Structure formats: C-alpha cells, structure tokens
Image 1: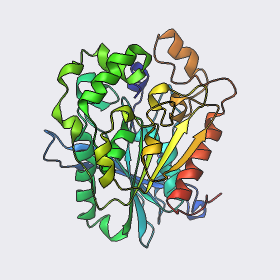
Image 2 (image 1 turned 30 degrees about the horizontal axis):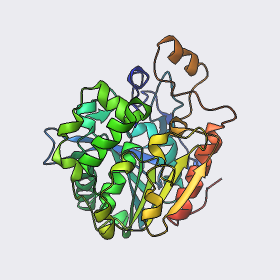
Image 3 (image 1 turned 45 degrees about the horizontal axis):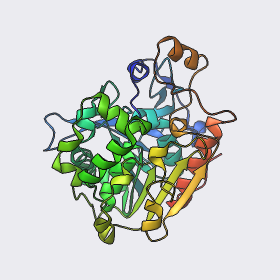
Length: 350
C-alpha cells in the first residue's frame, strides 16, 4: 500500500482540447465517461468512471494530464458498443485514483469489457490518510454501491452481462477485492504483524507515520463484505494478507487470481508464498502469476521522460524508479494478458 504524495497532486484531469475522431479509427481507443455514485455510507457522492467498447466516435482526449504519468486517450462520451459485455469493478490502491489505472482499464475495455471504478475517499490521490486507510469497510461498500447503481442505470445496465461480473484491485485495492470475495481480516493479527516487523513492512510504516494505534484498530477491519453478484476476483499485490482470518476462507469465493510483482525485488508485505503470509497455501489452488524484474511500484502508470529526476528533486516517493532491467510497459502488457485470460476476455485488437 503505497502513498503517492505530491506526484499525485500534479495530475489535472481531462484535457480541454478534444481531437475529433473518424469512424476509420474504429477499435483504436476505448470509450470513457464519468458519473457520480450515491452511497449511503458516504457524506458526499463518489466520483466514478467507466471505460467500455466504443460503438461511436465523438472525439478523443487524454483522460489525465500530468507532469509525472503518461496519459491514456479515450473516446469521451461515445456510445457503448451493442451487445452484452463482461463487467469489471476496479479498486485503486492507497494514494491512487481511478484514472491513474487508465493503462489497464482502457486495454481491458478494448478486449470487450466494461470497466467501472471509483475514487475511494480517504485513500485517493491528495486525500490519502493513514487513519482512514485502516478502515476497510467503506472501500468494499464503495464497490457494492457502484455495482448497485450501474445495474439500475438505464444508460449502462442493458449492456452488462450479469453472469460475468468480476473485480480487480491493486495493493489496498487488492485487499478490497479479497473482502468482496468473502475474506475477513483480524485486527489482532494485524497488530501483531506490524509490531513484529515495524517499518520493514511498507504498509505498517505508512500507518505508523499517521499515528494509527495498532492496539485499538476499528472493528470494521473484520468486515464481512462478500458480494455474491461478483464471480471472479483478481488481487494484484494485495495488502494485509498476514492478517487474514483463516475461518473466513471456508466461505470465500475460490475463483481467485493473484498477481505478484518482483522476486528478489518484491515487497515483503505483498509476499503470498510460504516465505510470507502463505495465503496461497490456504486457498484451493488459486491462479497465480509472478512478473519480474519488477517491484510493487512497477504496477503504476508509465512515467514521462524526466519524471524520476523531478521526483528526486522534490524528495518525493520514487514511483518512476524500477529495479534494474525492468521494462514497465512490458510488465503492464503481461498483466493485461494474464487478467484477460483469467476473465475469458477477447484478444488484443492490435
């Protein structure tokens, strides 16, 4: 669970100068739109986005403009392609945001899926608090509220294949995915884990810097958030797996895939094997893929030239610095292919 500080604040939003597209550009880009989600557990509407197979082509624009990240273009507000499409619910990591994952969402949409995401308050870019991060229940409830709304929305519901609803999450978003699959977490186990390992574990160090009291964690860390409408689950570098309540695994949906980034460079907090939390060994043969050389931050969007040097001058998190020999773009393509295969999506249009 990485907290991205001032780098995230450099993100701006949709570019203001559109570029008209022509029908000949057919499958070049995915469609994209934004909307608000009303959630009873939140004091304000949630910002949500959707990527999808485009059926018309109005104009193209970069979804984000940033001094750090490469942007992803989309056909803004285009009609959805006819037919029923698999639905993927996407959960970002601590300090991330829904649009920063455009490199993944857009490609899954080009393979036939509708990809829905929200910005999780309290754990999103520019609004990432350790004290709020440890509250797991609101994040899972965000995804449930998102699904409730989109299945009742006449603009989107007719295009959704309700038998093919899945969820994908990275880091803290991976923890949210596990919650939705039925996994519960034990506050006492997490307290013991962080007290034993301290700053050696990135998630514990982040929470400690925010003054989190590990002896008095909120009860909602043990939330039962299983959503039976979701049938497949992809957890990428999930956090907090050392604190899994083993009793909850009896009622966990086992159609799970885990993705790990890095071997010798992998973050210890994300180790699911016997050398770490051994969550893999406690489940019924989940799918598992490891990509290297890489580390946890390799999952983040590709950076613009000079971004690593800019971050160094700002004394900010090294979100653009990968282990030697890492090709971030190639790792991303492998992740896209692995998820697409697990979810039985189409092949790349290219």
